[in-house]
Image (cartoon, rainbow, N blue to C red):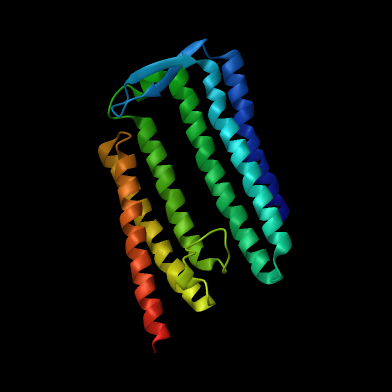
Length: 225
């Protein structure tokens, strides 16, 4: 399963570069819509080759993450904890890559057919907000299942000393992500524009702040008896 997930994540990381090349060289005009304002109106045109920017960033980020994970796994002394976190990390990587593939496909479509962002009732904004919200919900359910590590999860100093404290903080963080995911989906469906991003960011800040404070208070109570 580990090998399958690693291969799948590699395919998902490389795939955007391949279908972007097909779109750029065979379907897109020389100048395309390159940026949209908050209402979905085009405010800048640019070269079709700008479409390669997101796939290139995705590949670089994927490479950096895989290098960091390789050295982290190699230096770990707890094989069981490393195996579990590695498996969860592969799942998270796949979820994020699926999201970024969806975003890249919508970006290519918008650049070639800008009418998809022509009004505040943008279907693309709704689709992306729902996908992002679902990813947050899935990540929120995964967080409490992770073991202590220095790469993913709630990693504040006060929750890194014991497995119990780690679980308390990451369970609270997981709930915060689930709530942020639900708010993101609702904002996308109601606002039907990229304005959902502002609601999403505020929801993340508020829920994660509350989760951090809550877990700190609970952990201190357990320490004091």
